[in-house]
Length: 117
Image 1 (cartoon, one colour):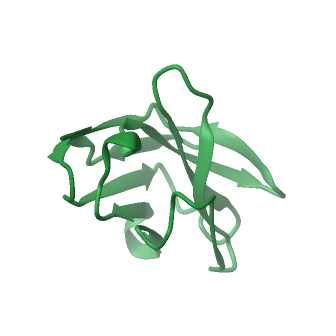
Image 2 (tube, one colour):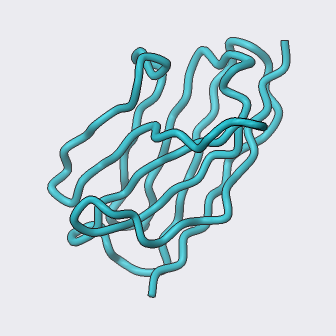
């Protein structure tokens, strides 16, 4: 079993930056792929970025456009999502997830990001 806890969300102005954190309950990064997702009100959840157990990175659709950076700190069992140049459309609940072989099995409760204009 793996518990994930996100933090770092909040209210930020357009153009600002945030760093979201996802703390895992144990050291899993050598085996598990980690992902960040987001869900805006009234919309489906969408994938933002992943960091694989190998360390490889993948990013989602065009909205990412260099503004999102995923990273991890193995010593802290924590994955990060740095977001810059925030836009109102980035307003969403951001979730992290962990999984093996392409499936994300474990999910956090999410952290709210609200971008005000």
